[in-house]
Amino acid sequence: MRIQPWNLVFLVAFIAYLGIRYFFARQTRGNEKAVSRVGRDGILMAIVSVGTLVLPTLYLFTPWLAFADYRLPAWAPWFGALVMCLALWLFWRSHADLGRNWSVTLEMRKGHQLVRHGVYRSIRHPMYAAIWLISIAQGLLLQNWLAGWSAIVTFGLMYFVRTSREERMMCEVFGEEYRIYMRQTGRIFPRFRAELARKLDAARNQRKNRRQRAA
Image (cartoon, rainbow, N blue to C red; front, side, top):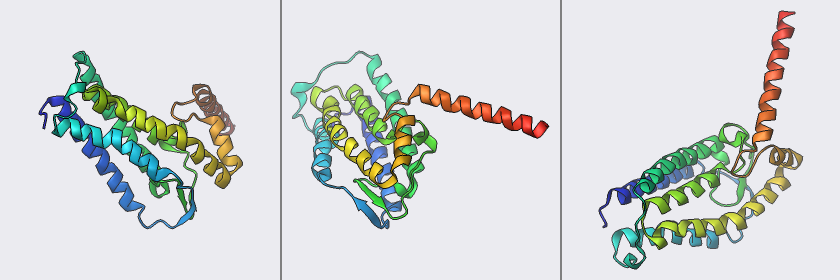
C-alpha cells in the first residue's frame, strides 16, 4: 500500500462511507416494495464502482497506475479533507432524514412518504450532492489522474441518466405535491430565492400569531 497521509485519509473516509450505507441498508432491508423502476440501475452502479472503488483500490495497493501520478499544491489535500468531512456529514444526514424511505435503487416502499424536512427542506437530492462532494474530495486526496478524478466521470454519468427517471417516478407517485416541491427546491443546490421567500413567510406568520395572541 502507498502509505501516505492523504491516502490514509481517503481510505478511512471510504470505509466510513461504506459503513453509513451498510447501517441504513440493514434498517430498510424488510421494506415491502410498492413501485420499482430499477431498469439500468445495476449497470450504472457497476460503472460508478469503477471510479469509486476499482481504480482507487488499484492506486492504493498496486503500482499499476503509477504512470498517472501527479503533484497537487500543498493546500489541495487539506481542502479535500475538509470537503470529505462535509460530504460524509451530508451523506449520513440525508440517509437519516429519509429513514425507511431510502432505497439504493429506484424503488418505493409501501407507505412511502415524501420527505421535506432536514436537508430535504432546501434540496431534493442531498445524497447525490454528497456523492458529488466525495468525488471532488477523492480527486484532491488521491494524486493520480485516473484514481483521483474517475469518480466524477462515472458518478456524473449515473447522475445525469438516473435523476430525471427518479423525478418522473416521484411525480407519478406524489403528483402535484412533488411538482410543488420541485418548484420550491433545487436538485443539489438550494434555490435561495425560494428559501428566502419561505423564511419571510414564516417570519410574517410568527408576527401575525404574536399580534393575535396579544389582542
